[in-house]
Length: 416
Ligand SMILES: Cc1cc2nc3c(=O)[nH]c(=O)nc-3n(C[C@H](O)[C@H](O)[C@H](O)COP(=O)(O)OP(=O)(O)OC[C@H]3O[C@@H](n4cnc5c(N)ncnc54)[C@H](O)[C@@H]3O)c2cc1C
Image (cartoon, rainbow, N blue to C red):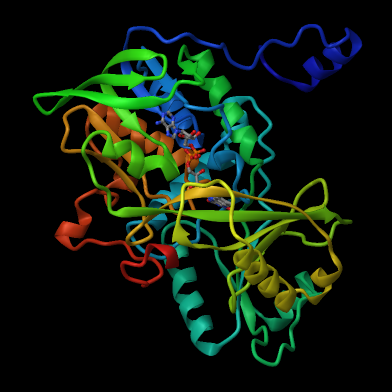
């Protein structure tokens, strides 16, 4: 079934009796060519591009819960291509280009909104760093504009410009960045994958790997054994736990990141704004709620809820940047488990076990990567070669000294 304005009108006039389920509720088959573990954005995008772009068949996505229940449905929806390092920026630019055509590609309204992202700076040193980052972005085909304080004031007059400690001096504007409705991305890719014959199997937890002579033969699941020629793990915050079942210890930790939504307000914040003197980022949803977040919780956890000190810390930063926020009521908050790598950058790579592939380490920036991560993992699974934009995302980069430390924080996962 194709979705269109005509279809909506027709269904409205005929009692909405013609809508079909968005994807089939598939039962697990004994064998597949490709098994993808994790029905988040990355796993579903991988299945979609494997089938659509690379013409592969016999593909299953195994999800322990329900589609959209992981980080893909829990994030603050920001997409951007404003990285600085060579290993990163071409990949994120590729991803943003895929976002730009995603709704037509999937015939699904994912509410892709390129409303612009503004990173504020408060010191001369920060301005110099932003200028360097902006130049790197432009060199990689992205867009960047350096604004002075007046340029920022014209867009966001209600910010605390004269803050004695952190006066706003300007910002780096990335106009093509913006937001995308997170769970619609999961549903859109699930629908697209299903239309290309992918089996999407929910309530099916992978509990072990069958590995013989260094080669993966299949996976043990809560719904029985499933054989596979190739298996890809794409389980975000559960990566360490899952890969431990294959005897692997990953260079990453799991931490909780929280997101917050305020009561609905009239249109106030036109784009996405980030504070340069605290960790705070904010946009406004189409329903009017301010959607914001900040730092991860400082300790390791697999709980999908966070602690109160971070709530206070995030709100403090928010009120320091937007004093009027002090009068707004917080409506809800939740948490997701982040796969924080040692250098803040991800992995899309083969493992030392033949037929077993790994995608993870996305920290809290993996939503914007969804289309490219899916494409690049599908490329790797199909051709056994890394896609040109994902060659730096190797698992052995800590051994070879090729870390991609965008923030320059060193091996401190909770700081990336
Ligand atoms: C609060 C918050 C805010 C964020 N904000 C942003 C943002 O603004 N921009 C951005 O780019 N990124 C953001 N992120 C990060 C982004 O959401 C993640 O990096 C990305 O969604 C991870 O990929 P995924 O969608 O595949 O993960 P998930 O949706 O978590 O998918 C992984 C799936 O694997 C399943 N799974 C786990 N173990 C097993 C198993 N054993 N068997 C079968 N299935 C299993 C899980 O149930 C889950 O559904 C944010 C994250 C959070 C939590």
